Image (cartoon, rainbow, N blue to C red; front, side):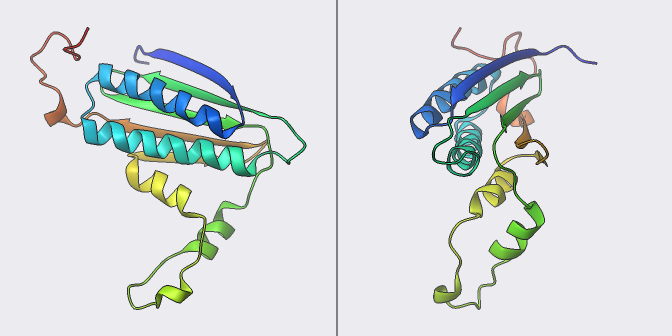
Length: 158
């Protein structure tokens, strides 16, 4: 197994903590050598996953937490977003929200449910475990053109 660093955070399931995770991820991804565009994709995917947990995992009268983990490898990052709240039927959500066809009138478009589709579109690999809450594991690889492989360091801003 390859060596990696791991950063873990636990935040309250409240909207004001989404930015904390985004800022942490942005710093880590920048240091790893991800491009600006890839960092923005990572931030959107993580924001969607955490926002889903904030909005859907816990009842209004229930306070909950969201666990966030970053596995930092030489060529990619693995991100885990997990809660212990209510789960959902992934296949049912996929059927209810998509697919969309260009010939459908705008009035027929359905609201909500795009977060998971967006995460899958922006990340290289996504796995969802919805037993005992929801855990989303997502990975993104550093594109070869983003890092000069002859450099002895990835980040130039040390």
